[in-house]
Image 1 (tube, rainbow, N blue to C red):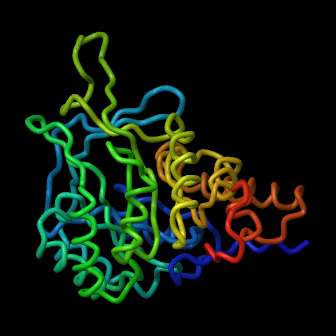
Image 2: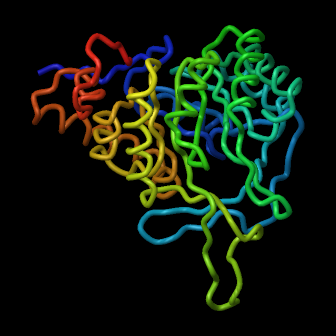
Length: 316
């Protein structure tokens, strides 16, 4: 039986549903090139207009049960330098390239508009808007309001022609409500949920928080059930494609997201532990499931767990 792993999200054809998620791996040319040869798409590190050193070390720690807590603070080379990198390698990127806009830049109005335009100019096939919380020690956590999300998407929709992907996380409001607002404002796809904040690890030897900023965002396997539930709810609320992200470690995890309603699945934390081989392993496990279940196409899996799901809605 011939297996078709391909999917289409916001008009972008992908050879398989696995996407390199945003993170430090997407800041270097060699990683973008190598992952593009096997992934369905690659997302860059979240980039700001100006370079940023991020928060002091330690800012990323591993925890048990395949989890990770980070408070990176957005370290990146800035769009001028990163744009040069993208222009040099763009023709050799073997899959769709998605540029990620940092949350702090998205709060700054004109800077976000300029950044999106410069990403498009450098060859990005889509723009991912990292609409998650901001955190600092004085204000703790602040989330994007529905008004801010709508205004941001509205402005960027007028500035760039490429698809806009709204990346959401858990906050004070139901992610399905936020996703619908993003769709109404012009988002081409929704990505959820990436991480859960706040999380903390205590160093029992030092008797103090292990992270320099004390709190961080929890990612990896511990948040997967939350991410699957978010995708399930969002897929019922919107007509645009959904991308699942949060705790993918195996092919079974990918299948779970697809069944919940995701058309694509971002992978990151497991790559920090296993390297690129994790992509190959997960694809083998996904293909094995499809062969055993007699499933010919990824499209036949998407949303299959939705009870009474709407007929005729093309999510891929």
